[in-house]
Image 1: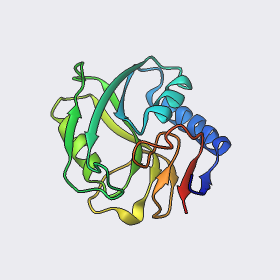
Image 2: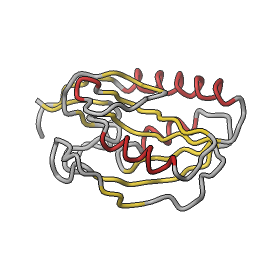
Image 3: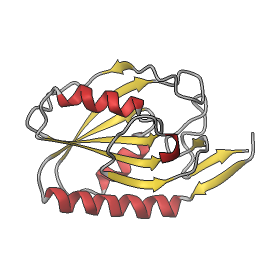
Image 4: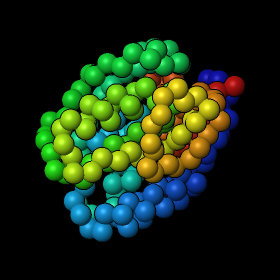
Length: 171
């Protein structure tokens, strides 16, 4: 196994998740929410965040791909799994593991807007701003990170390392 450097430890992640949950609850004051978990990377973040929210949270899932087996986004977004329920008239928060170039999230947000949610916001655990190629508004950001290929807490390298309780990078 390659050497893994810890970028954000488990304690910092959980503290930040709680802060984000409090911010979301303040913004939505008890309203029902729909969390759209972008699979597979944001599953751990979505679950931890939802557990800390007092509002009623409905979970939906989408799966998109722009990486394939590469470590760099191809820029081509492919929808692999769509929502099972209507989001029309609902307060929706897309939960993503990382915002990189922005292409995938721009696609997802434009795709969801036509379904007429009451509100549509984006919550990302990680924001890699220096890689951004298209403008995407991230309403709730866990951490801004440097331009490193990160793994752990849902993020993978060829389907490995997702289950690490921290965010790290390989040497």
